[in-house]
Length: 120
Image (cartoon, rainbow, N blue to C red; front, side, top):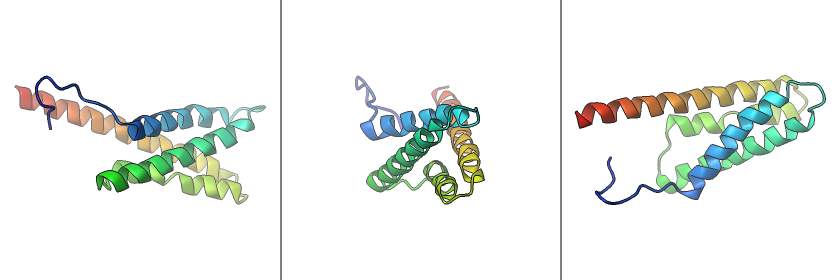
């Protein structure tokens, strides 16, 4: 889909919140693995909940239950496991959010390649 000529594409706040929460999850999640950064677990978990909520909201509002949204929602299970006492749950969530992020990059690459092919 291309934007009408002369119209600047806009990014909604829901997408900005979702993207920022995802990127902050990657950063805070890395801090979880260092001694003295136990606070990062709670920051990571908060960002994962925000990523989950925004993916859910985007999916509901746009009727687009796509694989990427599910990948962004799934790590919240690891966070829940972590708070239920299974310490490896946080590591699982961190690994899963990386899968979601890599999926996002791959889809962006595919979309860019497809648009180059369409434009000639």
